[in-house]
Amino acid sequence: MVYLHVPFCRSFCTYCDFYSEIACRGRDAQLFEAYTDAVCAEASRRRDEIEATRDLDTLYIGGGTPSVLPLSLLRKIISFLMSGGVPPELVEFTIEVNPEDIVERGPEYVRGLLGLGVNRVSMGVQSLDDGILRWMNRRHDAAHARQAFRILRGAGVDNVSVDLIFGLSQLSLQTLDATVSEILEWRPEHISAYQLSIEEDSALGEMVRLGRYIEAPQEQCAAQYALLCKRLRAAGYVHYEISNWALPGREAVHNSAYWARHPYVGLGPGAHSFDGTRRSWNAACLRQNGELPPETSGCAGPLPSDDGPLEGLATGAPENASIFGVVMPRVARFPEAVTAPAMQAVIWWPQNWRKGGLQERRNEVIREQGFYNQNWCGCEFSRHDNP
Ligand code: SF4
Image (tube, rainbow, N blue to C red; front, top):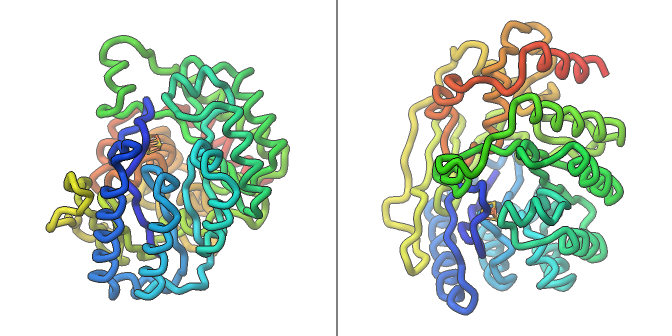
């Protein structure tokens, strides 16, 4: 299992504090090439680690915005990985894309991705309301998102995941419902819906500090989440993780495996790794010329095995279905574990796993108040447990 972080974006979205650098058009070629050489060198150094993750052959290219990289450089990275521990026949090979890149680069680019072995594309749509997209400072509008999805399908991508965001205070149920209705007409194989979180270092964090944005009340977020649950279930999507729905058999292999504690190697700045016992991470920075700094990693100690109910929620036997690590039979056996803070943690982790390991983030999560009350969580769980 390999994750490759591509730390470039054309602009920063309002809510985002992932590590990423702005790649300015016309001045990005050298930056991209230096980055490519740096991750190839890192992959070479870590070949043994990569080979040790071969119990599950997946590759996930995320960001940032991987689709800003030219195909030629992606090809160079993939060829390098595949001659250095990553097998050519992958169970799942996902790349994250943004709609505007797909529209700009067209079907030829998408066919090029498929030619590299990509068999799953995850597209950040977030909303089909232009006002919401402008507020998010996304570069695409709804028309671009529609066009991009058509291009993906037309070029032959048969496994598409669409990302949505809910929990904005200005997002009405009607607007969310309209977005969901159209997305369901597209019939992507997979839908991820993440609740907006206010990150201190994001533009949104600053807006909150200045009183320019008021966080959505819990009831509003819960109502939006309930709408998503209801609409997607009715449309035949399996709610297999707290923020993820898939048509039967199209659950994400790579992302689900994080919760089953499969070892993985994260390449690129800010990427995290797990060797089965210890978590480590690369420094989240690039030199100005695109190279990784010489000392790139930090390391956390082993995860304790007795972490109480919260950790119990984050792990589970792989044979069991899970909702972001919440193994449903286990929840049924330990209903007391389904507390509001635990639920908040489960919602919170998927949005933030790239920024910090479970261990150092958990305390912060536990201190937060849950978004949803215990009865609501229990109700949601029991629906999944007894469909
Ligand atoms: S949400 Fe994605 S595209 Fe937007 S700034 Fe963050 S990483 Fe870049």
